[in-house]
Amino acid sequence: MKTIAPRYKLFLVGVFIAFMLLHQADKLIIGQVLEDIQRDFSLDDAQAGAIGTGALIVGAVCYLLWGYLYDRYARPKMLALASFIWGITTSLSAIATTFPAFLAARSSTGIDDSSYPGIYSLVADYFPPESRGRVNGWLQLTAPVGFVLSLVLVLALDGVIGWRNIFLFTGGLGIVVGLFILFGVKNRPRGSAEPEMSAISDIPTYQFQWSSLTALRKRKTLFPLLAQGFFGVFPLQVITFWFFSYLERERGFESGVIFPIMAASVLMMSIGAVVAGSLGDRFSQRTRRGRLLVAAVGIGLATVLLPITLLLPPDTSPLVFGAFLAVTAFFVLFSGPNVIATIHEVAPPEVRSSALSVQYFVENIGAAGAPWLVGLISTQLGLSRAILIVAGVTYVLCLLCMLLATRTVAEDVEALRGEMRVRTAEILAARPQ
Image 1: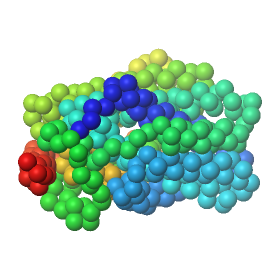
Image 2 (image 1 turned 30 degrees about the horizontal axis):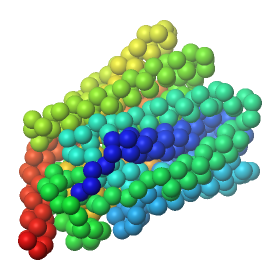
Image 3 (image 1 turned 180 degrees about the vertical axis):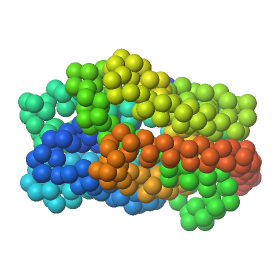
């Protein structure tokens, strides 16, 4: 197989990070301008929560479609299409003049929100197993850094051009990034980076097959990972959608205080994602369970630290609260890069986008009600208790599911390695000597 220049790999990761970072900023701006939108459309918390839930439902359904399209067609073209859709749907939400129209337009942004599996599938074909966790970690940090970028955009532009023009600006960025992807990103034969394929100069083209997808039911690890995913996005969705309002409303912090607190937490969350991916790579070389053990430790620590942080007295100084929040944030994304890498280590190359899409589909089905559920509980018990109940309970369930997954992952990883060895032997045997 032709060697890929390190410079091109760096360019590739840079383009993927740019897409995900700007897309995450566009996606998360809604939480920063939620108060403005509520005032403009006269919405209560339950109606405001429905805005986030609508996009999650649409995204969940579209994950299955994107997974199939990525495995069936050229992934760079599909990713460029997703970027163009991002630009169009965000712009539509900016010009909506009624709440039903805004809700419909904002919900349609879920179409492109489910486009990430193709990126991770390409990463798996450009990078070998021992470095995928680290690359996935760099990609995962786009979520927290995108949150900070959304804060910066809102603080700099909201008072000048308003939330509608901010959406028009970020929608335009989607079109620009789409052009970079369309003309700069090259497709890669599926399975190219698997160790067993290193001796083959011309890898056959593998495309989506229903038999390969249905055969995944034999991978026992995927079932607890799916269950973990169902509950795992609840805390992150709750925090990204409601936490700005929580700091402002419940803690009484002003924007000048909120920004450094969130910036520090996001920085720690970003570092945590990269550290988690790197630790997963390192421990996976020692034991097949290494990645998921790292993820389990992160979830366990977040489960303990989040309630401690939220239960700090209301008069706690911003400095102390920010320190607790930053330490908690470090462990929030520990599972992300390692779950993705694990799915790619148990699923055949031709259905990796579909396998990850199923994972994300289940995650979004579970998380779709999170913003609305917190808003509903908030009307009865207050926002602080609502966040604590929803995030705390789901973290405990995530930990139990992750521990179950560690029991079967070694067997499933070895099963895929054996399958790839068989494929390699068949390819070599079919070629003239």
